[in-house]
Length: 239
Image (cartoon, rainbow, N blue to C red; front, side):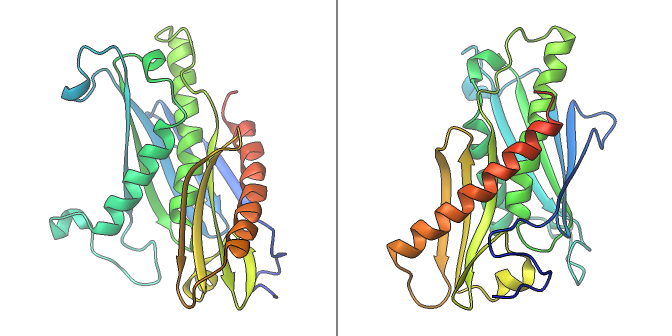
């Protein structure tokens, strides 16, 4: 089907990465998937949650937020509302477990890496952009620790990236923007490692149910896009 930006059905939006976007974070990256822009930073804390104290291993956690004018209308800051919404909870937990999957926690030692993912502008795929950008920030942060002599071994064992796929007007599409996502009959988010394994597959039929063959088609499409994202990550991550 023709796409509004002229892309092929199996093409990513233009992906741009600006590393070290923040001066003080141990690692940071502004990642753009088309008009979606997410600022990802990795901060190192020399402590772990209470349940890990004395175990000789580290932890990774994530926070996700959308700026009030990230979308077409202003949304209220969740800090002002006094509570974090269900969607925010879901996404930051997804980011955290996706990035924990790539780390050797014992090699990290008793440290916590906090990943902050702030959506500056939203046009679909904010969670997948956040995961992909957070990996770059994380990798740059562990490289910083190695340069300081705080680590002898890089605890990052593999790459992690994510992309959205879906079916719009009967056609499978890669990396949906907001107009496509809002009209999708099937909407999925896929998180993978560069070893070819899945961390998470989220898939929802918005209209009629979809077949196993359709699911396989979407996963193949997602893997193609994610492998392209791995190449982009490698160019910006001090590998």
